[in-house]
Length: 348
Image (cartoon, rainbow, N blue to C red):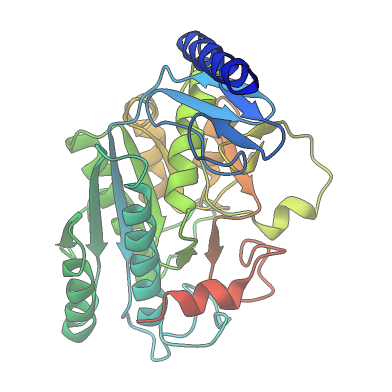
């Protein structure tokens, strides 16, 4: 009799589960915190790209803004006029670990490749494209970058910048009337090139990236799921920054907290020129974005910050990437982050 009763309850439970799932509900077994009838645990990733975002115990967000393609543009600069390439652009400060710039560039690219490959486990139909825009790197460094890009099946490309490109667009004096260095001109040329590429090719999202951000393995996955979720909730496009900068804790600023896929995200008003956004946002603010590479403002990202006054820009807590600058930089190493572990994981 007990077996018949149990069998009847089991049958009815299965029918109930099917009905509830059709209405968008998931059933959790509180005894073991498993999702019925799948084998997924409640603390695993439960979201499905392009369909729904599930956060326990907040429930389900239907995805209205499906991401089908992502283009990552990495601005590479590993060899310039300065003798010691361990020194940061237009500064006398050395980066954490005090190694030649190429080491940071290679680890940035490797971390992006690893993070993209990991993201394909959930975004199986995602079109990925990694572009490296390089200015003045020597042949040996370019060869090392090329070998690394060939190690993945993801579509990749190196674009070597022409030194005379954008000559007529870049003002060699800053907003204070002072001459800017050749290294800064190179940096601005690379910024303009990356924005020009984003204007010319089609992609749902673009990720503009400096070549000294070492990413965690789950960074791209979290950014994509979060973009889909929060842009669907707000019914508007966003800007996402991968870094939890130290400066965010130096002032008491008002912020709004969002729940991404597996991380908290908060609104911020400033970033460096490393951010993810949509093609429609690039089209909307293209003239403003170009000005970042045309005239040296103080801060350099001033035009970007003005855009954030009108649009949502979010950064994660904890960080998804380590900006490998000097250890004392307020725009550098994220707090409560295992810097050495992420650095070592991406050794070439």
